[in-house]
Length: 504
Image (cartoon, rainbow, N blue to C red; front, side, top):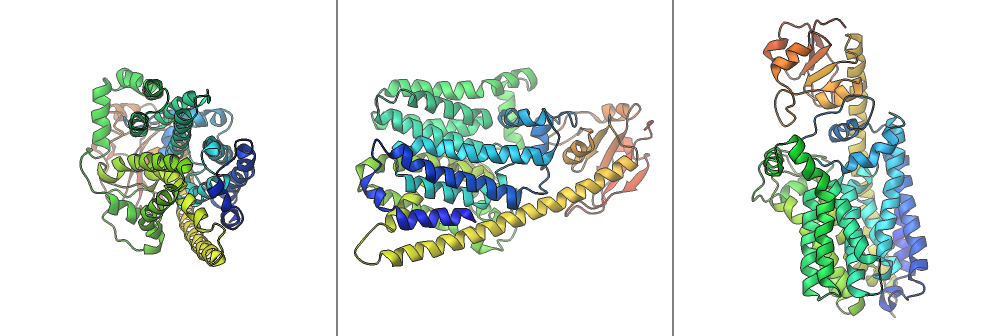
């Protein structure tokens, strides 16, 4: 992949800049080609190798349905925030094409990576930023989610930008736009995932006080303002639709499995072999090589920070990035009882900076052994990239097969007369309903949005389909409806659909 060449060139050709530090007049110019190359490669590789055939996932269907004319909006459960829905609205308003959405989001993702790292051009050398961007972009998690309507990658961009602007505001009184950029980054992260923004703002607030940053009271006010502004829509919606903020938080906790003390590090390790969601994560850890980087990540971060400690200019940015990255990882590693690799994307984005610094410094010019160090680092980076691409391709292939299965199921439902206006309930109702242009409604579970009586009443006026899997029994109101077999959906076998006898 093109990222390999970018990283290797950085390691071999520009390591000396780490020692010199970026010069005031040339920092922006030096960073431009590095970041442009990495960001363009990120978007192009995803579009060429991952995006084709990638249908909408379960969560994506919920987010996109809020603004798409393809189907009625799916139930929006308490933990969700509408930031990603706002982001996809411009393209979904024009077309229902999934590939158009993928292209739009991939281009945005490349631009987002560029802008988030561009903020750091006065803080770290250009080669470090290029390597950090390449390492983060080439993680299978980042590559897989580049064009998806999911919030975690965008939280990562918001966190990167917020931390970079915070450091510039703390260091340079003349940097007038940095405080506003910090607040905007926090607000953007809050719009995507409110709880992540809190874990982003808290360590920055502590850093402002500990560092005795210039204008630190103003920075604290702006951090709080960023959280409040970004969370405002979520809070207002809590009172309008969920019975208040406390009720929404409690319901969100229930859906996430009752937040508390959990040791989920092992769950995240097992999920790194390509699992998009590991809940419950009581599965075997089969592909050890896919998670090797997770174990060495703390060591490389520590090495990068230790190396930067010798240069005062780079020490503070990397220490702050490390602390904030760790803070963003803590809730998912120790308070959530399951794992989804995408949860840690904001942490990985920030921790990539000290890792990149250590790698570039390891290859700095020296009288002896330079090419040996470069060769060792290049071999390990190439092996890492190969493993990451293999996992990303495997995950994408599973989604492609699922997309094809959903196409067959949708065709079968249409043949049975399930056409808009229609309602789908039961197993995988959200994805099936959105694909078929129907409303998805569940009388139970996390997406409870209708009563059994209301579903039965709806069946008298429109087609209602209840999907059941693996020998399950239909609800009482649907037991007299005709049953029809459906194609399998991935590991879900024995699917049957019970279709109401309304005029179809």
